[in-house]
Length: 202
Image (cartoon, rainbow, N blue to C red):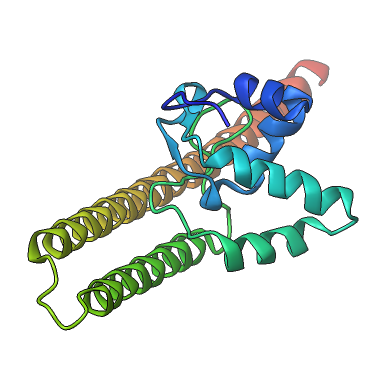
């Protein structure tokens, strides 16, 4: 594996001898299990993501479905709290028309559970490796602070999505009212023109 700190999609594709378009598709399809930094076109992957891409390739070549691959990744690799799916043009995806907030809350809940599990495992590991001596409190504190930071970021992003959803609903209500007004104006214009045609033809 490469010693670089972060890798682009093109670099991963070269390293695994895969088409770049395939890696682009996988980075969106399996984003929640791929450790990355940045967003959109600036997204780069940590070196350990190469192993995950390789596992995806192997599972698909063995004939597994994308759903099977997702289930296997969920068993073998942790969820990434900062993973947010992106659209094909590299921007933020629109919220689904129905059930958008439920999906967001479901993902936030899954990430929260994954973080809690990781924190629990870290504390258990620290206690077990102490061999009867007191665990390194600074390591535990650092791990807890990192987990708390990830939870805060996730909560902020969820709240931002909630606010965006409210704003979109308000805009939709305004657009619907405008459509009603335009329909009424059109009917009045049609009536006016028909009256004019009748007056000219008589």
